[in-house]
Length: 318
Ligand code: R5P
Image 1 (cartoon, rainbow, N blue to C red):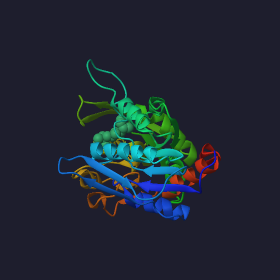
Image 2 (image 1 turned 180 degrees about the horizontal axis):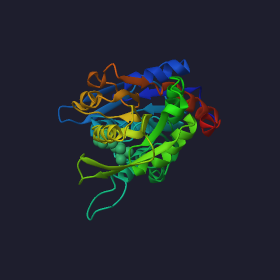
Image 3 (image 1 turned 60 degrees about the horizontal axis):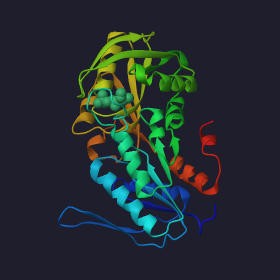
């Protein structure tokens, strides 16, 4: 594919810090755009650079305020399409609504699919996502999808901590995350344990029932795609203490942590560290000495470079 010049990086207002960090990796300037809201609450986006025949990447995780950020992303894509961009890639390192992915009760929506359709309808040619709750959500998109994973960089973080192998066990906080945790455990050459968890109703309450595997006298490394309220990790840390684990590291790609969730989670006495990435903004409420952040900017930047140059993205994870 021939484009005029190198990739052009733009950002909505969801997470401009991430876009700046990606540009730093790519050694390029962030594209210019203006945003406003009319007094009737309508969002307006104007792209200030010429994007005709350019390879355009729009960075916008669908983090809080989720619906505003989704709408801004759709409007940005529409503006780029109408300005004759050569190709438009929507970069959504956090894809909200991914958990609303099936009709598992009568009369409920599949909102993940709805948003995917809207992104394609707006005019995106490709999408970059990261550590989806369920990989099959990729199939909701009629566009090309590159799903990146923070798993190798998070595993490297722990490898660099030099926790003796015999002291470590990777723990899947629920059965749904056991496959992902298996891959994580292999990278760390550590055994795997699994917690049996039950979610109570449609809200955020969870109940842990059992630990499958040996965690006694070991540091438990809990690995999940997302921490939202922290209920899953708190319940897991508690049951791991009951089973004789000597400490817990909680680790996830996406950290939503609304309200006082980070405070509650970091207050858990046997939690040594909470390791997250910057797929969404790191607001003050998420900051705490126990919270460590691994940036995804170099990974997303490298993926953008490879997509632009027509090189393998999968090779990044081998
Ligand atoms: C869903 O099952 C995900 O993998 C996470 O376990 C979930 O998002 C965590 O939510 P919370 O922190 O509210 O328990």
